Image (cartoon, rainbow, N blue to C red; front, side, top):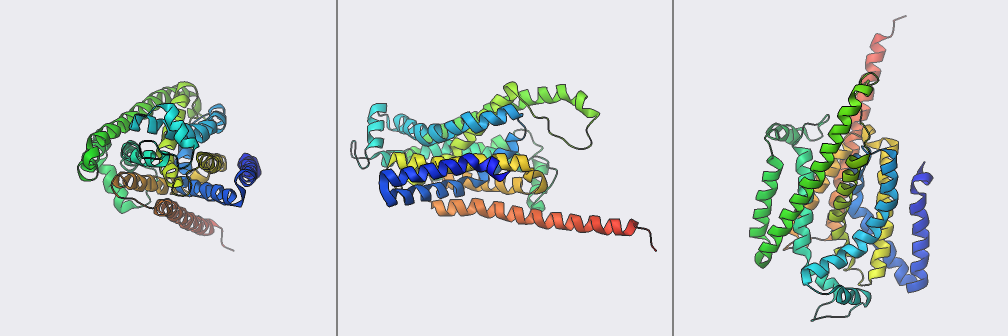
Length: 366
């Protein structure tokens, strides 16, 4: 199971590290290895959330996620996306940006490619921060089968019954961030944040509409066989929009890794190779979680991932003015998921103890 799921990731890691050693020597080998670990640590919570969406898609679209989705993640989000961001925000020609990216240390108008990318941070942080904040808010405000931190989640579920509350909170947060952290970039932050909100509402809304239609059509057929709560795996338009949702989510997660990578090296190919290897493991881990049913066995993992997403949204928006170390970002995500996993283990043991006790009481005596 592990080899079948992670086989491609293991293979690409070996090939990638050998290539790094051949092209850049031991230094390149070490840099690519560090970048891979950086990407995995920053995006571990992404894998858990991806799994919650992926398990709703049929096997065909799961394969699309593993093939085309990987290409988009590696080359689109880790290579083309940062180039496009610099083109749009710095208003430079694509040729100039590519030239800067390919020549480490080269400057144009006094700035390197990495510095231009960093100057684009307010726009990307606002877009990604609001998009991730909406994911967190829609999760924390909805009624759930299980509550992890009941003292937080139960009251929020009650006020979450108000229509469009998550959107209202996101808009107020955006206004506060633009006023407190954006300074002269306030207009850019507001526009990017609104685009992030619109993207979330459009992609998530369309996916929900098509998914609801398919579930309604399948409900009659499955009602007779249903013994508990089940998930109808979707395809077609619903799966397509869920796929788009996953790719936008990946973009929101990937930017902090891309920017953080420039603190390690300015070499675009090293960055793409290192982050690409990390992205492969995130994809494989997502599929592993789905196939093993880990989210069903450890019911608080989804909670931990969403709390990590909420924390990342805050970190991105605070990062418009203040630098937050990538180490802190990674530790926050791993910390929430680790705590949720341990809580799930404790819950499972407690439930098993109760079941064993109930069975022993029903056993005939003597």
